[in-house]
Image 1 (tube, rainbow, N blue to C red):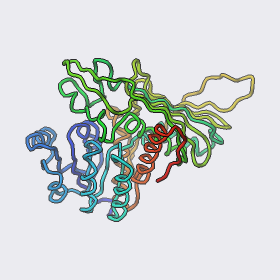
Image 2 (tube, rainbow, N blue to C red):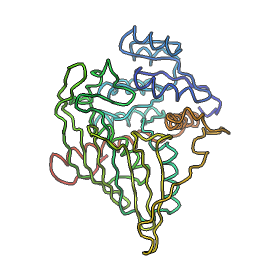
Image 3 (tube, rainbow, N blue to C red):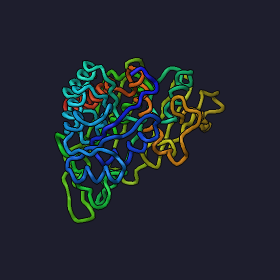
Image 4 (cartoon, rainbow, N blue to C red):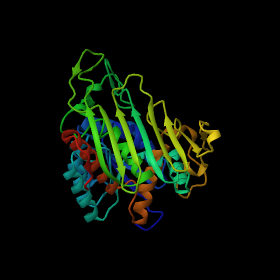
Amino acid sequence: MSDSLQSLRVGMIGANWGIVGHLPAWRNLPGVEVTAICTAQEETARAAADTHGIPNAYHDYRQMIDEAPVDIIDVGTRPALRYDMVMHALAAGKHVINANPFAPDIAAARAIRAAQQAAGVVGMVEAQFQWLPQFRQMKALIKDGALGDLIGVELRCHFPLIRDGDAVFPFVTRPGYTSNYNWLGMTGEGASALRNLGGHCLHALIYLFGDVASVSATLERGLREWRFDDGSHFEPQTVDTAFLTLRFRHGGMAQMNIGWSVAGARGFALEAYGSKGRLRIEAPSGFPDAANATLSHAPAVARADLGRAAQPVTLPNSLTQLRGADIPMLDDARVIIPMTLMLDEMVSAVRENRDCHPGFEQALQVQAICEAAEESERSGQRVTVVI
């Protein structure tokens, strides 16, 4: 595993988002091959393998994990199904990338983290915000003192995921099979606007500002029925709106406003302010990626200059380069740049026998924050985050 030229083989479980978001990113990485794919049905597995040039097809994840020529298992099914898959892969000594939300509940999250530590393998969670060039540059500016002492953060993440009469989950819920993703609204599946969209945002906040000490939350299911163009309908049971206030362990607070049933949704914005300035990342067109997100900075100024607009921050080309590469990725790969950089981090961690980021420890904290927020909604009290 210490050989920097070691070839690595990936087995993918799931052929929806994995094919769209992960497969092109894996294929951007030198010395990495996707050698197997698994779906629930033999015919869909074979079709996915044939269509996308993957050598081995399976419809039993256990068989793929135990028999296929794979070093890394990429698990992309719904949270409630992933637990057994992840645990089986870890028991077999495979490195694992697990999707977000990480687990159906905190007990499962703790068990996954413990199994990964016991196996001595690399565990990554698919939370790619911190591999966006804009977030990495913001982190560097914070380290250089652009904010000074953190005072507060405002974060908005709004999407028209399910609207009245329309299901528009990006890349996934398409005309013809929208009902496949009704599990997003089902109790017991480990999903909700808080856990899905909010989980990604919490990973970003931890990356930028450190551990979260406590949370208070108000959660709501605002849209009581999802109706689709084919005349079908579904009554969701999970929350689609979440308001959180967080206290960071090392100082500063954050407000989060999460919604996936928002009419005229304005996408993502994160603004942090401190004793020396203000930083903002914005992606008004949707989920942040390397193409649509912008970063701006406003330093603290004299009274006469109050209200001066923040200035855009130029991003170094190095933030879109793979480790050891001399050239950036192709322009037409901008949307999958953060995914590629994140998987490059995992591959490097496997080859160097070290932890990766974002890893299972961070995923466990995000799970704990989400469940503390749910407890806060039930109790009406601020809740300490316990990992």
